[in-house]
Length: 365
Ligand SMILES: *Cc1c(COP(=O)(O)O)cnc(C)c1O
Image (tube, rainbow, N blue to C red; front, side, top):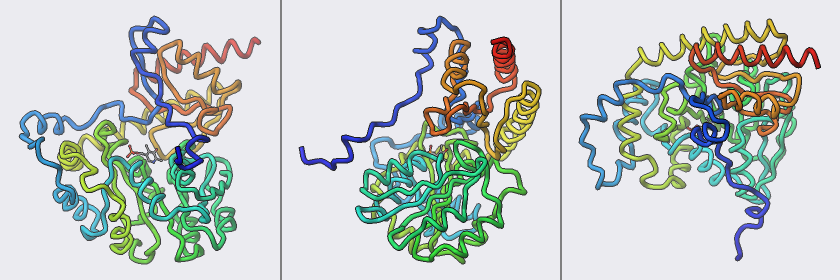
């Protein structure tokens, strides 16, 4: 068939192992999934309470304008309603951007390693991808500026970066924005925004007016715990949003997802509890890693990228056999690491035990 040639050179997204399969394969009763940076505390109870009583007309298409969620977010972030774009997860917004701005002959610049969907989207559109290696887990912004040429249409900044967790320092970000050609779209993916410490937040929404070529991406999948419902959004100038809105499917965010997100965003108690727990457990886990001498990157997120003394694949396998699903760095462009989502306290304590024992055996080898 006469499809795009690139499709034969690419592979579909490989989903992580299913919990039930891991249980069967290793004869385990309980599995802790720490591979996709989901919220281990679930989502706000108010979402379940609301949903139980809600009579959403499932036979109607959803509100294609997501009016209620739009109003809520516009007032929360002090932007106009026309500055928002919704997607079935941020993933879909990444696709819309690729579709609108990337084409054969265009070039796009991103860090390496970073969130894989940027490259995936770019390849499908036939654009050339320029990857600029991270420096100690951080974006090399001057290297990225140098990589921009007159064919560059999009630069992807992931802050905090997946998989390292490092956030771009505020000053560096604005220096970059001021030096970047104004006809190059800059995508600032803040999927882990809520987890960032106050000091790390570049308050980019306060400065959106200055940069017509900037779009900020946020999601309900991580700190709000709604990954299964698929809601993400972009915030940018009205003129940019209007262009991307041409690409968007008319009913791309389901009614259920819109309603759940509108409820979830109101529950600050749940959010704060998530952030507090994650922060405390992450600190404690970092402390443990210090004691066994394993290094990790500065993380402003709910996960840690940890350097491993043997291949990440082997550590991943050992953890799997003990009931923990984590990401092997070899699968995400970060060899000799594992990426671990910060789970609940007891689970992280158990994992410390498994790693301590494993590390002890390595010392003897
Ligand atoms: C998880 C993640 C996303 C995707 O989130 P969805 O809204 O669930 O599609 C986007 N960017 C980064 C960096 C992520 O880690």
